[in-house]
Length: 164
Image 1: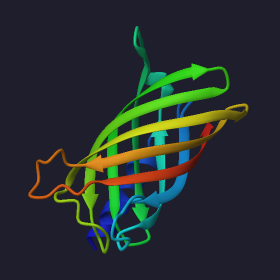
Image 2 (image 1 turned 90 degrees about the horizontal axis):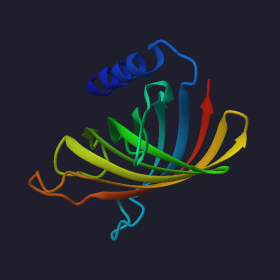
Image 3 (image 1 turned 180 degrees about the vertical axis):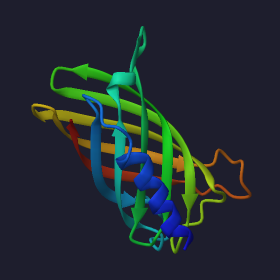
Protein backbone atom coordinates (compact mmCIF):
# COMPACT_ATOMS: atom_id res chain seq x y z
CA UNK A 1 0.00 0.00 0.00
CA UNK A 2 2.85 2.38 0.89
CA UNK A 3 4.49 1.75 -2.50
CA UNK A 4 1.24 2.63 -4.32
CA UNK A 5 1.14 5.98 -2.49
CA UNK A 6 4.71 6.71 -3.53
CA UNK A 7 3.95 5.92 -7.18
CA UNK A 8 0.88 8.16 -7.04
CA UNK A 9 2.89 11.02 -5.52
CA UNK A 10 5.59 10.65 -8.16
CA UNK A 11 2.99 10.60 -10.92
CA UNK A 12 1.40 13.79 -9.59
CA UNK A 13 4.75 15.56 -9.25
CA UNK A 14 6.12 14.73 -12.65
CA UNK A 15 3.24 14.26 -15.05
CA UNK A 16 0.57 16.64 -13.84
CA UNK A 17 2.86 19.66 -13.59
CA UNK A 18 2.26 22.16 -16.38
CA UNK A 19 4.54 21.53 -19.31
CA UNK A 20 6.38 24.66 -20.35
CA UNK A 21 8.50 25.09 -23.41
CA UNK A 22 11.91 23.45 -23.20
CA UNK A 23 11.00 20.98 -20.48
CA UNK A 24 13.32 17.98 -20.58
CA UNK A 25 12.25 14.45 -19.64
CA UNK A 26 14.81 11.67 -19.30
CA UNK A 27 14.11 7.97 -19.15
CA UNK A 28 16.92 5.72 -17.98
CA UNK A 29 17.77 2.14 -17.14
CA UNK A 30 20.84 0.52 -15.67
CA UNK A 31 22.42 -1.32 -12.77
CA UNK A 32 21.79 -0.54 -9.10
CA UNK A 33 24.75 -1.34 -6.79
CA UNK A 34 27.18 -1.92 -9.64
CA UNK A 35 30.20 -2.79 -7.49
CA UNK A 36 28.42 -4.93 -4.88
CA UNK A 37 31.06 -7.21 -3.34
CA UNK A 38 28.63 -9.98 -2.36
CA UNK A 39 26.62 -9.79 -5.58
CA UNK A 40 23.28 -10.35 -3.88
CA UNK A 41 22.09 -6.72 -3.87
CA UNK A 42 22.79 -5.85 -7.51
CA UNK A 43 19.56 -5.05 -9.34
CA UNK A 44 18.22 -3.52 -12.53
CA UNK A 45 16.83 -0.02 -12.15
CA UNK A 46 14.36 1.97 -14.27
CA UNK A 47 13.77 5.66 -13.79
CA UNK A 48 12.80 9.03 -15.12
CA UNK A 49 13.83 12.59 -14.46
CA UNK A 50 12.38 16.02 -15.13
CA UNK A 51 14.57 19.05 -15.79
CA UNK A 52 13.15 22.48 -16.53
CA UNK A 53 15.88 24.56 -18.21
CA UNK A 54 13.52 27.57 -18.17
CA UNK A 55 14.35 27.80 -14.46
CA UNK A 56 18.12 27.73 -15.07
CA UNK A 57 20.58 30.18 -13.58
CA UNK A 58 23.63 31.04 -15.63
CA UNK A 59 26.54 31.70 -13.27
CA UNK A 60 30.27 32.14 -13.67
CA UNK A 61 30.74 28.46 -12.75
CA UNK A 62 28.07 27.04 -15.06
CA UNK A 63 24.41 26.74 -15.98
CA UNK A 64 22.37 25.37 -13.05
CA UNK A 65 18.81 24.03 -13.12
CA UNK A 66 16.52 22.01 -10.81
CA UNK A 67 15.91 18.29 -11.32
CA UNK A 68 13.23 15.96 -9.96
CA UNK A 69 13.00 12.24 -10.53
CA UNK A 70 12.91 8.75 -9.24
CA UNK A 71 13.68 5.14 -9.97
CA UNK A 72 12.53 1.70 -9.00
CA UNK A 73 14.55 -1.53 -9.05
CA UNK A 74 13.49 -5.05 -9.89
CA UNK A 75 13.79 -5.75 -6.12
CA UNK A 76 11.13 -3.09 -5.35
CA UNK A 77 13.60 -0.53 -4.01
CA UNK A 78 12.51 3.02 -4.75
CA UNK A 79 14.32 6.36 -4.69
CA UNK A 80 12.59 9.73 -5.19
CA UNK A 81 14.75 12.84 -5.38
CA UNK A 82 14.93 16.52 -6.13
CA UNK A 83 18.07 18.59 -6.48
CA UNK A 84 20.22 20.65 -8.79
CA UNK A 85 22.40 19.98 -11.82
CA UNK A 86 25.00 21.95 -13.71
CA UNK A 87 25.40 21.66 -17.48
CA UNK A 88 28.55 22.24 -19.48
CA UNK A 89 28.22 22.02 -23.26
CA UNK A 90 31.25 21.15 -25.40
CA UNK A 91 29.78 21.02 -28.90
CA UNK A 92 27.52 17.93 -29.05
CA UNK A 93 28.93 16.62 -25.72
CA UNK A 94 27.22 17.63 -22.47
CA UNK A 95 28.85 17.10 -19.07
CA UNK A 96 26.22 17.19 -16.33
CA UNK A 97 27.15 16.80 -12.65
CA UNK A 98 24.24 16.79 -10.18
CA UNK A 99 23.40 16.49 -6.50
CA UNK A 100 20.01 15.46 -5.15
CA UNK A 101 18.79 14.48 -1.69
CA UNK A 102 15.90 12.05 -1.69
CA UNK A 103 13.70 9.44 -0.10
CA UNK A 104 14.82 5.79 -0.30
CA UNK A 105 12.82 2.68 0.53
CA UNK A 106 14.65 -0.67 0.35
CA UNK A 107 11.74 -2.92 -0.59
CA UNK A 108 13.38 -6.33 -1.08
CA UNK A 109 16.69 -4.71 -2.02
CA UNK A 110 19.68 -3.28 -0.22
CA UNK A 111 19.19 -1.52 3.11
CA UNK A 112 21.05 1.81 2.86
CA UNK A 113 20.63 2.70 6.53
CA UNK A 114 17.90 5.36 6.51
CA UNK A 115 15.20 6.97 4.36
CA UNK A 116 17.18 10.18 3.65
CA UNK A 117 19.87 9.45 1.07
CA UNK A 118 21.98 11.72 -1.16
CA UNK A 119 22.70 11.08 -4.84
CA UNK A 120 25.79 12.50 -6.53
CA UNK A 121 25.93 11.88 -10.27
CA UNK A 122 28.08 12.59 -13.30
CA UNK A 123 26.39 12.26 -16.68
CA UNK A 124 27.88 12.47 -20.18
CA UNK A 125 25.34 12.94 -22.95
CA UNK A 126 25.45 13.54 -26.68
CA UNK A 127 23.03 15.56 -28.77
CA UNK A 128 21.77 12.94 -31.23
CA UNK A 129 18.79 14.68 -32.84
CA UNK A 130 17.22 18.09 -32.45
CA UNK A 131 16.08 18.26 -28.82
CA UNK A 132 17.18 14.66 -28.03
CA UNK A 133 20.16 13.31 -26.09
CA UNK A 134 21.64 9.91 -25.37
CA UNK A 135 23.64 9.65 -22.15
CA UNK A 136 25.66 7.55 -19.73
CA UNK A 137 25.78 8.32 -16.02
CA UNK A 138 27.51 7.06 -12.92
CA UNK A 139 26.02 7.88 -9.52
CA UNK A 140 26.66 7.22 -5.85
CA UNK A 141 23.91 7.16 -3.24
CA UNK A 142 24.65 7.28 0.50
CA UNK A 143 23.46 8.89 3.72
CA UNK A 144 26.74 10.66 4.56
CA UNK A 145 27.07 8.40 7.63
CA UNK A 146 24.05 10.05 9.28
CA UNK A 147 22.36 6.66 9.68
CA UNK A 148 23.29 3.67 11.83
CA UNK A 149 24.94 2.20 8.76
CA UNK A 150 26.02 3.62 5.42
CA UNK A 151 26.84 0.94 2.83
CA UNK A 152 26.17 3.25 -0.13
CA UNK A 153 25.57 2.12 -3.69
CA UNK A 154 27.12 2.94 -7.05
CA UNK A 155 24.88 2.90 -10.11
CA UNK A 156 25.37 3.05 -13.88
CA UNK A 157 22.65 4.02 -16.32
CA UNK A 158 21.98 4.74 -19.97
CA UNK A 159 19.46 7.52 -20.61
CA UNK A 160 17.39 9.02 -23.40
CA UNK A 161 16.33 12.64 -22.97
CA UNK A 162 13.83 14.62 -24.99
CA UNK A 163 13.11 18.33 -24.77
CA UNK A 164 9.47 19.28 -25.34
